[in-house]
Image (cartoon, rainbow, N blue to C red; front, side, top):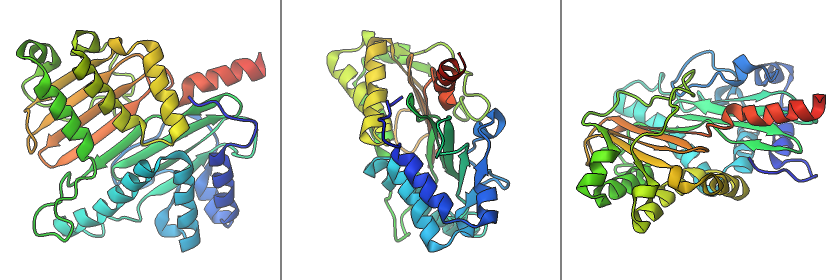
Length: 320
């Protein structure tokens, strides 16, 4: 969670500018109370009925303002990744012959609460393979998880004009390099099972399903292996803007990086089905490539999922 200055948070400024661009119908589609049911109603499929105003119902200026809001929260890399995943949706429509279903305009912005007020509020940008939720408690901080990025195809196949594009390549390549750097004994501890899991385990409604870390602890790694693991963790955190990323990485260090665990399941090469997990007191990351060319990644903060700790602290401060 990042500490907020006395100036209004940039996300609030960007959200208010966006809201001012909407008519009454647009505001009704975008704004919701900060209620647990809606706030936690996230998903990563191309579902209908998603909370929020979809891009397809916005004009060009409003779409630009949505990406300005995203830029107020994400790093350049995080914003590039978001745009690339939306682009992949159109590519997937071409490859599958279903362009109407794989719609790059079926991404929506929802705002929960009042960005202009002093009470906590939140927002989410979401569509197929992107779900980013930010919870802001003015004067207390910002929670940045759950944060989900996926890619289908994970690598655009030969013959397409974008052949070779791998939006989430770093997440796979760093983890495979770490796995192959482990000794046989370390791999025996890290590998949970020979087959990949069918999906990541902490999906919508199951965010708290993994309680105890499994696999190989960083305390049992060499210095070089620990450094590789922390570089992999940074690849997730630095999708956020610099101050938010630094705050999350600092929390990992303060909680004790030696408590982090790296776990693997499935095959050990690119182009195969595999899964890995990074799990510690303040960070839980899951990656799955459970179809050979279809990747999911999700990042949770077990201590502050959906800003629960922030909301509790606000309640204690504001209501005694």
